[in-house]
Amino acid sequence: MDQTLSLRQEMSVRMIPEQIVASMILRMNAEELRNHLEEELENNPALDLRETVADTTTPFTCPFPTTPVLETPSRWRERASDDEESDLTADLPAHETLRDHLWRQFVTVSLPEERAVGRYLIECIDDNGYLSVPLLEVAEELGKSLDAVEAVLHIIQALDPPGVGARDLRECLLLQLRAGNWTEHRDAALAGEILERGWDLLVRQDFEAMSRHLGYSEQRIQEGYAFIRRYLVPYPGRGVRPPWEMNAQEAPLIPDVCVRRTSAGYRVEVTDIDLQASSLCINREYQNICRAMQRGKGTFSEDERSHVQEALERARFLLKGLARRARTLQRVTEYVIAQQRAFVEGDAQALRPLTRRDVALQMGLSESTVCRATIGKCVELPSGSIVPFEVFFDVAGAIKRRIEALLRAEDPAAPLRDDDIADRLRADGIDIARRTVSKYREELGVPAYAERRRRYRASR
Image 1 (cartoon, helix red, strand yellow):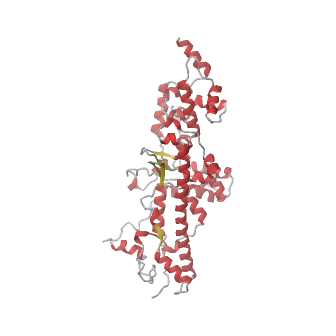
Image 2 (spheres, helix red, strand yellow; image 1 turned 120 degrees about the vertical axis):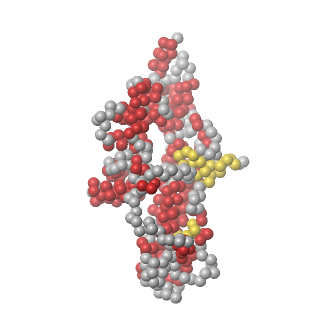
Image 3 (tube, helix red, strand yellow; image 1 turned 30 degrees about the horizontal axis):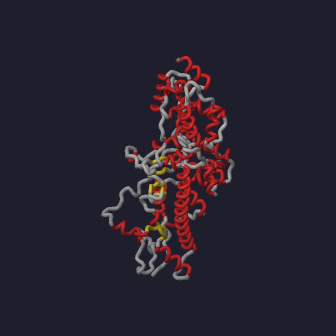
């Protein structure tokens, strides 16, 4: 039997260092990982699913065609034979993706030395148009300064569609506002103020408090809000889609981890997505080929040996990365749930101020690892609700809720001073300065101590 490998499209498999693969996989959320695994199964013939592994009694055969005839590796032959007709769309050019769209613009406005950072950042932008990785992590991985990475991000954020490359919804809306020509819209400036100074109140839809905080009538605040809803979009990347996806119903949110209530407490389960990541394995035929090469069985060219080695290493790196992702996600989630137990049990006001740095220090992990494990990912709580990990790390939001609760419970005849609030928070283990309390109180739209006392006396 001729065991010479016919070098076809499979030869394009590239070897990626193990650490980079592991970091990339850890950073992906469930939906991104599912798409990535589909691509890997399609492009790396050394990767397989356990249920499709060939029977061990099958004699050694080469998975590549030995003639230039259009054939496929054996693991795809059954699929191909099931089709009555060939896929008429197979040779059509692929539709331009959001990342293609951004890169095509970026190369025309950037300097050559900015291209590597730009390519990395663009690859980290999800289909909704958001940057899914912290800039500090990018700087560390590429060996660049944070300022240099941020400068390249600003270039990307100036590209089409407006709002792309944002790190959160507020930045996304502000980028769109700054990119547009709103000279004929009298509400644009007010919309900017709402986004800049009244964001927390906007999230809570507390227009009365926002009116007091910004100094506009409640009607004007509503007009500014109407401008935001009418002219700005929360997901700018969705405008760059193949035509057949434009009206497709959005896929349901896939949690990355699920928290289950048991008789012994809580159990954390890492989601095994549709492709069943736990069923991925090394293709048996490629293992046999590798053994044959090691034993000197058959004649193989250097290109063929290199291809098999790279395909196998890429598959092994992927499997190790998946195992590491599962372990890290489970460990981090278990720690976070232990710290936020009251919230998990249903008390929305019980969120404790928690930072990723705190988690990293307590668990002996790097902060960038905790960031990769949590940013852009979601948790399914025992109640069945799905919340983003960001909820657990919203330090300012957690403190504001504490301050708001204290202010609601205060005696109107003897309102709390900012110093009093700071002292009570410190007694609860929250180290906070008086000026920070003042800032958060103002953002909540609550007047200062003197004004609250004056209003109470005036009402008597």
